[in-house]
Length: 292
Image 1: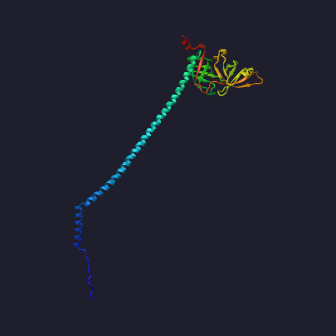
Image 2 (image 1 turned 30 degrees about the vertical axis):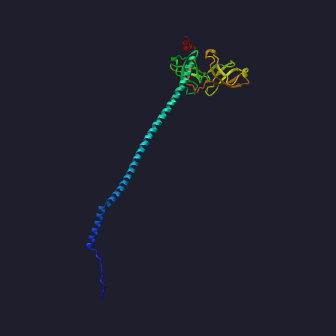
Image 3 (image 1 turned 60 degrees about the horizontal axis):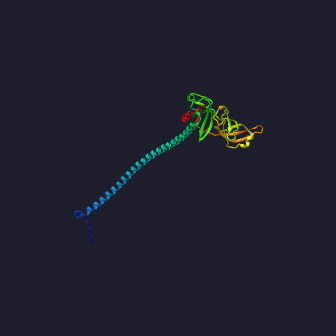
């Protein structure tokens, strides 16, 4: 039985060459028509522009970060300078306020001392007794300035003149002053309104009132809280009619014919900084020069 012949297809060299020639021809034809050139240009432009855009974004971000850091540093430095300026301004303001207050106090004291009939010596408190608070204090004037023992010491505070005490010891450049609230300080005094005379002395503490004794019970109805107690000027120890304090309490003691009167000092001793020491034996030279 005869078999039918089999046909097979073989890809020969001729066919391969033909195929390559066809591809080359097509490529050459495409290049010659400009189609591929246009595509490459577009692709290249897209790639480059995208890359450039990305690079620009990165560069801009870096520049912005650097600028932000510089600006932050500048703002911090500016803030520090402003803070220092504010501190200096506040310091100057406080100093100006203190200087104004000091000038007002000195002006007030100068006006007071120039009007006194007696020769006087303005002085500043430079120390207080540490063993017994406020029991005595030291001033910056002594014998070199003309201060003598037992000279009365006055002060002016908020326009009010008051008795402070007297000089108990004198050095060359400093002096010790015993205040009126000391238990050893006794002052001949009068009630300003009634002119009744008594004796004032302290209880040893700046926080305690003074006491006035030997005022007769018969004048009780004439007295009022707030009445001013002044120096009597007797015995030549103090200037006449210098305020000491005001009546704050009146007590009647059954077995005593006189009243027990509490007196609040007219000067706040915790705030005094300057005083005026007076010489009762000499006239104020400023008044003499004004008369001439």
